[in-house]
Length: 455
Image 1 (spheres, rainbow, N blue to C red):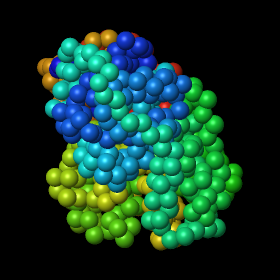
Image 2 (cartoon, helix red, strand yellow):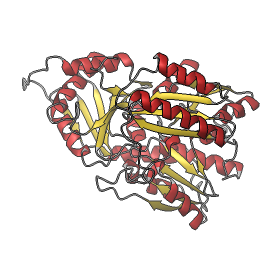
Image 3 (cartoon, one colour):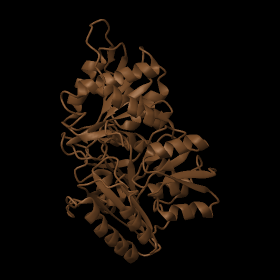
């Protein structure tokens, strides 16, 4: 593994103040991004920049902008906005080739990062390595010979908002009560207004960001309060977004959590996707979704974890529908990225068409999972780790062992025919893995989020 590559599963994501998100590093990173943009798109490249609600996001943005404006770029600042909004601008504005989203997604407020969005594609491993190499290369000196053009475009978020509404009939949510958890993140700027203008009676929670409460026991990782609110208000449905609004999980009208697998199963009944011959999940997708597709004579493909892998397969096979259990759902006829707001609208629309807000298309196989913070990152291809996996699979369970691309943890997931077998197998694997990797600590049970939703 090249230790000079900063990129993980979904962009750059680090503890704020650590490389490359430290005071002296951010200008270097901005120079690297600028030089990469020129290499890829020329000196007149256009980019849009957005951020979530973390207290460090404004500092990161202004620091990056002060360097990026040394180059003759067109820069559109959308301010706080969901990742889907930035992606929509990149796809629809001819003068914009790239989007920079300052966010650490579902991570705590003290982390931050950058997602890089391109037209109709994800940033490639080659681009990631080039960017990382440019960071460590000799930096460009300031010549005062050219400057970029800055547009503080608040109107772009309204344009995105209107584009979403235009995809559905007016007031299609009239008579429906919907609970929305904005995770005190970027969705707070738009989600309540969006669903209200579609006709719904909206009950909004966790939409008062203060810089430190993003994802704090709320949003897609912590859906429990939304479940209670759906039952309390006899709501038709609930939606929980994450910090940057690119993922969503659903609470049905019975207060039950429905994840990305359930969403994919439901959307196969949507007129836009019911004729799909193949859809895409990941190695973390529940076997029940694959079985459901088989019954409908639909092929089900699995990729590695990460929506970039899902998108790559969708493009390769010219498909429209794919996603992850954690709630990253790509509707490729809309955007080449996950857009939690649009997915939520399509879920509500499909439930109305089916007159079914229980979202009961599939019945899940039991799963058990754990995250183990490690001291030593032992290769999964080592003889010891391979032996653990081989013995575990002999039990008849489906086992996934992988290192997180966003956090320093080993993730273990076991899927079996019974919850007892899943839990027993997980305990055996985890005990052996802790010995090999050197367990640091286990997440406090009181504060632990739903492991299934962590990508």
